[in-house]
Image (cartoon, rainbow, N blue to C red; front, side):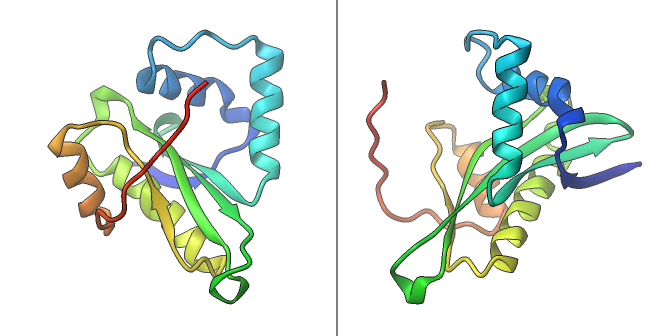
Length: 145
């Protein structure tokens, strides 16, 4: 199997958009200009967009944001968002691999924690994140616009 995890580049835009459609199929489609601008902005930020590449096909992704901090001795923290695998490739370890890459990048950046929130109530999703080495803790709150 020719599978690897790596940081995404602008050349991965089409594959990332396909993955994000799998994550949120009802999202409005972005214009090419906006999509490219948003990906360039993401790629310029600390952290990274990680992809699982299976022989040239992007099958999974996770985004890590590394945020500066004035607590915990000034150590930053990481926030993982937009974790998704193509439905045809789930259950094969590809999602776990990109989450592991994001967590490792947070560790290397001296983050004191890496966290994520999920809105999916499926127990399998919770089991997936626990299999990635994460523990359920705290209560999440949000405001949506």
